Length: 541
Image 1 (cartoon, rainbow, N blue to C red):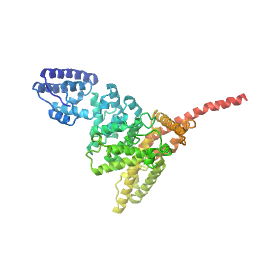
Image 2 (cartoon, rainbow, N blue to C red):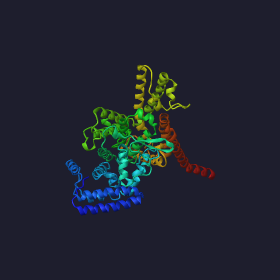
Image 3 (cartoon, rainbow, N blue to C red):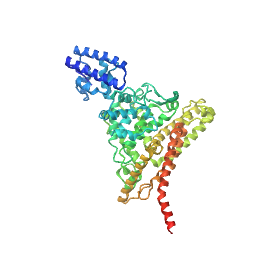
Image 4 (tube, rainbow, N blue to C red):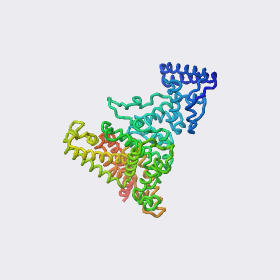
């Protein structure tokens, strides 16, 4: 964003007005006199430059316009754009740096964010703070109530952290968003008792990322979700994206950092954003029975999952790739290949038809891993953390082993295979985690998925197709359906995940019990009228 200094008197008055408005704003928001004292000299410096007719950032303006992305605006527009929003940008910076900061601010905030009301920005800046995003109790529905683009904003907040959080704070002229008081933009977020539970990824320090490009891609993905689907919509995608991130945050970071590199984590979170893109609101069995075009194309094998992956990768790396959403621009070929493998494998692993095989493979790998560890390194490697309790499996995978080269290579190969399996397992876990969530979310999502199933059953009746399981609204009972799904799929999966990540056992498993109890109570309620009617009938006889 560029400013041309044209009129000494006009610009001096604008700066003076800006100073008065900024002073009032800071007093109202922060009551911090020190910052006002720092701010005033900067404005005096600006007045001095203005009186000399200095042109600020002209070269950058020409460069921006040459790319088609620049906008020639004057100082009054800059000041108006920052009224009540981005005062902090000019603090502690020379005037030329302020111009660069303004450009940086605009580059890192998507238009969808800029169009929000101040009230919505303040609420979302809190919800999308790193601390809140890293909580299992995170409520995606609250985000969706404040924006029609929850996937874009959640994806931006995760993939472009910590700059995204800083941009949000700046855009509402607030230096500390509730929940992020302890954020260190070059470190971690400290929590209670001196322990650090929330960790930044700092993807930008490991490989090239462009927030504008990432937001453009997320926008293309989100618009390809059918918002009319009761369940498989953009809100579900945003929920799975945040949950995938949260599972990484629940890991002991000593081991997470040694097992999963930044490319793997970035790729899995990115895959979560498009894991259900273009979902038609009907499942694989419907596609197969109806012999839909995608069923024919993918030979009845993981039909929807193959389609989701293909759509996303076509935008990222295929024929529909455009420069404006080329997320992997500047990456090496090898890194692109690695990222693609992570994304493809994890999305295909969300097929429920492969659930039991995936769980079985992980159980077997965990057991085999323990055997190899004991044989080569003894019991110490299985009790790295100390105490009588066995160490979590992630600590075993992260161990550095001694011994002859052949044994060490064998165990390292097993470690790599198990880590790859865990990555696939994480996205699948996030995808079916609804019943494991806190508060009202399990009921919210449970009712929505059944609504979508029932709509599919109605279509199948109309088309004369076999009615898929759980899709006949005249037969299926909501409580029984949810209880069965939890007992057969959700509970065993998270029990296994708890052996890998102890905090899952501590923080997630209790929520599953609460959800199960709710549906059990609902089942009892649904039986009461029939019981009372039977008793009344007996009394009459």
